[in-house]
Image (cartoon, rainbow, N blue to C red; front, side, top):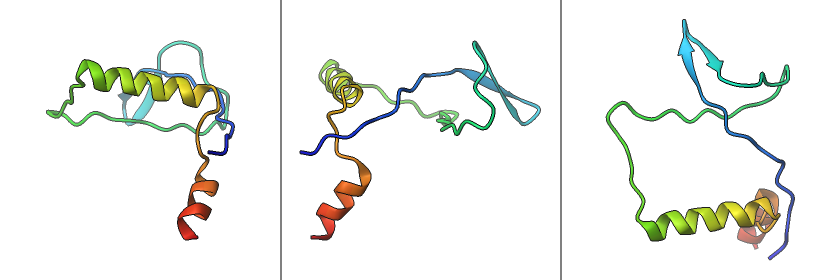
Amino acid sequence: MRFGKLPAMRIATGKVVHGKLELEGEPLEEGVTVTVLVPERDETFELTPEEEAALEESLRQAAQGQFVDTEALLRELRQ
């Protein structure tokens, strides 16, 4: 496994008001790119304690740079 770098990220919560996203907390820098995850109206998901632990471990590994970046993965898949 080749290690990469994952930029530090933060979670921001907000609401859509008049078609625009209004975030709570500190404002983001002008021009920053964001990813928005929107829950479906009536759809939820639940994790078992084991799945939640696996997710937390994966997030910890990613934060420590223990992941394969997209370019490396695609090169490997093409071989």
